[in-house]
Length: 88
Image (cartoon, rainbow, N blue to C red; front, side, top):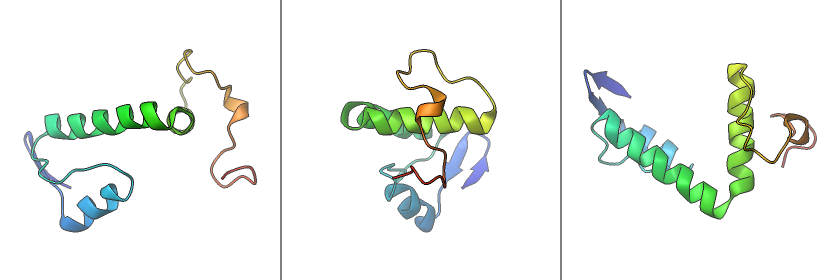
């Protein structure tokens, strides 16, 4: 991603990499567009795969060294970490 002020540009390869995760950054030109694309992606996950979104949130919190949101139904120990045998 290239950034100049509030303007951003993704390379075609980056757009494809993110698309494989379900995030559409095609046509994204500003930070607001990135936030909209990520918001849409997160809402889609919340609607279709809330369990997966919870796991992502837990892993992000763990990586940042912060406590996950109290609203999560899962305990941190309930979700296998990346690379563990319980990971699917």
